[in-house]
Length: 88
Image (tube, rainbow, N blue to C red; front, side, top):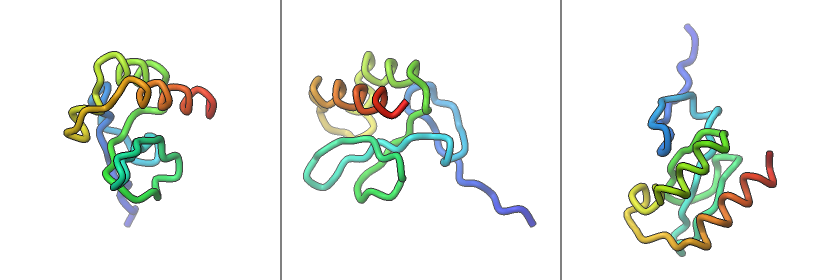
């Protein structure tokens, strides 16, 4: 029997994809928000496609505010975008 891969939904485009094809955005207990390319960091997670269009949508629509149910400042969005661009 083939093992089922876990599915997650991108918070930007709302598409369901395999968890391994998405990037996890994590908020630690201290409230620090960062990209988690390993998927192993501790904290509340949300998923986003490994695609600049979804990253831009995330920033433009301030989607982390809803995903983490907390206000997220502009600097955090900028750092996430920069972190993504440096990995690509």
